[in-house]
Length: 118
Image (cartoon, rainbow, N blue to C red; front, side, top):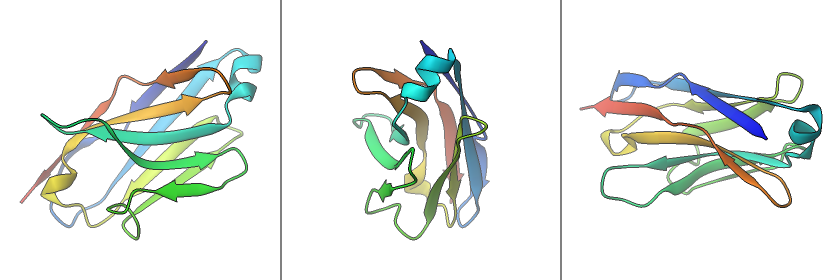
């Protein structure tokens, strides 16, 4: 089993920045089985959507709206993934969820609220 704990959400004005963190914990075998971590978000009344993801080797992919504004990174030694969000817009308001995947399992964090005021 893997536990994911997010932090770093909050209220920010449009144009501002936030950095989200997600720390993974669990057995060594479970942690080492993670091959991809990512961030998803869900706004009220909308489906959960991918924001960005990063593999263990460092390959990344981003949603179109995140390209150029958001940066995902990971510290394998700390089992932590980060999402740096710049130039935030009101439409970025959502609950942001950390996600970790192995070959056969998917884990989710509890979510952290990001609210961007205009």
